[in-house]
Image (cartoon, rainbow, N blue to C red; front, top):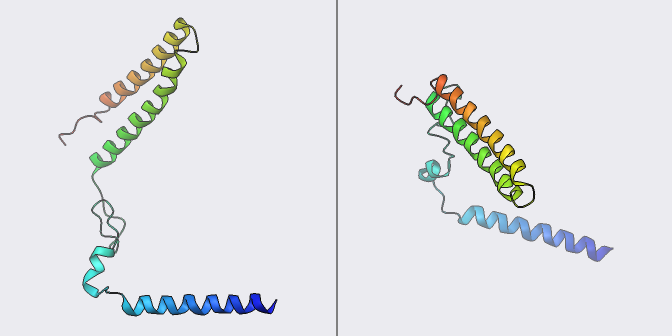
Length: 117
């Protein structure tokens, strides 16, 4: 029991010595502050978080996420081709493509694909 206590104290002392040495020997300076700060989408993290951002950036992100999910849903349909009847596979694929086209038409109708403004 005493040996476990001694080993625990020794580990704590060694880890504290190593942390102190790393702090004393580090080469960081005040000039490296900008390199170590996080960079998020062009915003300065130390300023106000309520700065307006480009709506086009948001729309591009949303459309990318939609297409990413679509691709993740298309892969099982390809695997399903070998497991089910061809007509069932065609119905499922056709329904999925129709849903995607309706979504694309809705985006087009709402002028979400217009990048000029």
